[in-house]
Image (cartoon, rainbow, N blue to C red; front, side):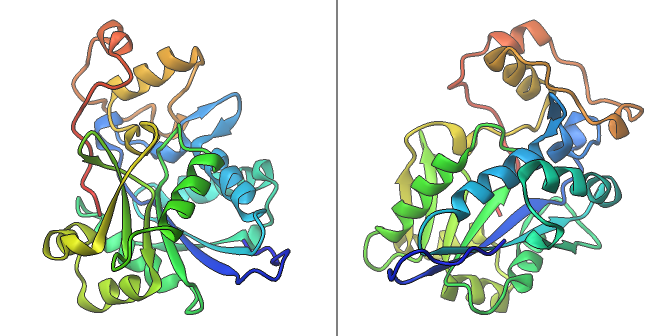
Length: 260
């Protein structure tokens, strides 16, 4: 999605890689970005937040959606998601990971390769983060723009836990593509180049991996968040006690999928 700058301030061309290639195994094998409430999926909500972010002065956004498992279901839902977000079909580009596995770095590289060469900054988002909104995205981007000298990546941190969105300088994104390294591997070898930004809330680390996560979302919002119908016939993972999951405090820690 591209919006013209509104001032003489130098324009930031932001490339957004939205990762939605996962199998959603621990939720019974469903496309997690199609979890929905009130007729709106997580995907539609995320696209709406990106549209709001794109209205900022001197900012243009190019969005790439990386699909893998469940690509047909997500593509079928995409026109509605775009319409609900107020975006035209040309607002994003879809790319497919033909062999998505447990390592999200492959999907990240595909997304990076699909971005225009002119992007100056890259933001990496997960498609199953229900609490992130446009304000969070704007704060993260501003923190990157004000990052310490010598750093080329921002990773939001919550109590020592890395989250998303991750923001990369364009040069780093190109280097990751050239070497084939994952962001996690690069962070281990270049810690001084990473700005571990203390996030102001838990939104960067709250995603939906398990039934307990979905129960927690329902409990905290009081809303009937539902799994996509396409996954209802699949075998669910081992059952978890819904009442215990709902009673867990918002700051409880839990295992998360690998950081790309």
